[in-house]
Amino acid sequence: MGKVKTKWVCQNCGYESAKYIGKCPDCGSWGTLTEEVEVKQTNPKQSIIADDSPVCLINEIEIKESIKFSTGFEELDRVLGEGLVQGSLVLLAGDPGIGKSTLILQTAGNICRKGKKLLYVCAEESSSQVKLRAQRLNVNSDNLYVYSQTNLESVINQIDNIKPQILVIDSIQSIYTSNITSSSGSVSQIRECTNSLMDIAKNKNITVIIIGHVTKDGNIAGPKVLEHMVDTVIYFEGDKYKSQRLLRSIKNRFGSTNEIGVFNMVENGLEEVTNPSELFMKERTDNAAPGSVIIATNEGTRALLVEVQALVGATSYPSPRRVSTGTEFNRLLQIIAVLEKRIGLNLSKHDVYVNVTGGIEIDEPAADLGIALAIATCYRDVIVDPNCVIIGEISLSGEIRNVSNIEKRIYEAQKLGFKKVIVPKQNKRLQGSYDIQIIEVARLMDAISACVSKI
Ligand SMILES: Nc1ncnc2c1ncn2[C@@H]1O[C@H](COP(=O)(O)OP(=O)(O)OP(=O)(O)O)[C@@H](O)[C@H]1O
Ligand SMILES: [Mg+2]
Ligand SMILES: [Zn+2]
Image 1 (tube, rainbow, N blue to C red):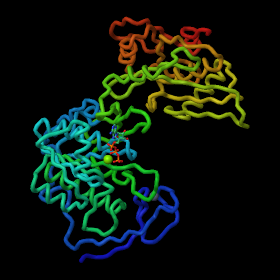
Image 2: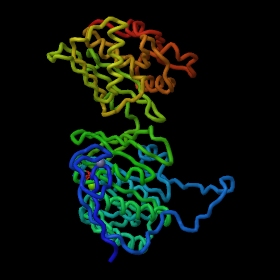
Image 3: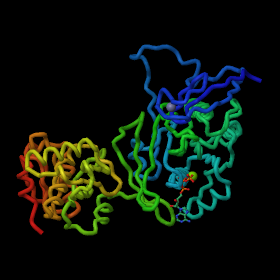
Image 4: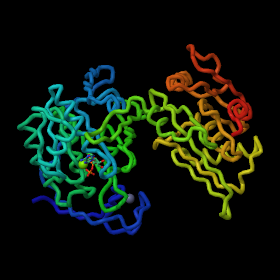
């Protein structure tokens, strides 16, 4: 028996304290510290990197080519940075029931079909439950092993038996190691298990995918505490009542984190959406309503067309409401200020709601002009030409500033059959030839006169 240690751990962020504290000094949440008893085994812990790793000069280090392989889903590959890296540790996090197991089981099927061996540890479900899902998703392979187990040591034994190239843990909250006594799902367990899994990934060169639940409830440790321990963190998001799902990487040691992947949840599993703009445009029911504008936003290596909607109405509150969904709140305030000052819109007695459809989060200023036009047209009860896509950043003086990757955005608008695109005049020397009318604007007023008409 090893040494027994008690500590208080914040279940929200993983902060540790020797005694109870009501408010976590790290993340500021109240009542999230719980007592965890930890029995450390007396044998020294293995280190993650092999002990014989020598000290060497940077100029003399030989680079081992990291081997990447496809998941069979282009959308997932792009978010991962051209596929999964052999020997890496990936965390897939998402709300309960969003479709994490579905995504990974389908991915497992794709990978196994190409001859790789995969061990799927279902710590939450029985093997027959997984089999049922696999049947519905049409996943079958002789290389896909399913193991219903919650004990990490048993899993490690099976790794030595089966020798898979890929290991899936579904989920990290329901697995435990016998090394420590705290209950599964506690921060200590999650940390300890993730450490061991990192060990396995690096020393046995196995790609490990762990699934983690995100919960608003502070009792179960969210994957936040393990984000810094893994190589890649991917979030799977979406509205449970809608079929669309978004994949987004928030940390990636092997690629960029700007990419998003789009899927559709249907009866027999997840379908890739290779042209998301088309999907977002389909959702557009009334394409000539005041306050509706199509913008071209940049997500990683591709441009996406999305609809921005604004609702402006007389307020019944002492101070008017400003609500933004899918755009940055401070950006919205700035755009409202510019509209008031530069084109004389008086919004001080009006509530302003702005919404980006499709669940996309826009964090680039190239959406400014679209947002501004949505607000202005809703206020004046006029419409923006429904055949027009709006691109541009707005400066405080009301000038339209240039944006990056303009060509990609214009091509996306052209591809989807739009007739006109409003672009900043500052974006000079556009490369390429286009079959779409390009209108260059220098100021906010120019944009309004170029594409706004009365109903
Ligand atoms: N028989 C079915 N037909 C169609 N869709 C289904 C069916 N069963 C489940 N689904 C879809 O799959 C989703 C659940 O997927 P999945 O179990 O992969 O999610 P999860 O994120 O792993 O959930 P959990 O948090 O329970 O592990 C459901 O919300 C539903 O949309
Ligand atoms: Mg699941
Ligand atoms: Zn905390």
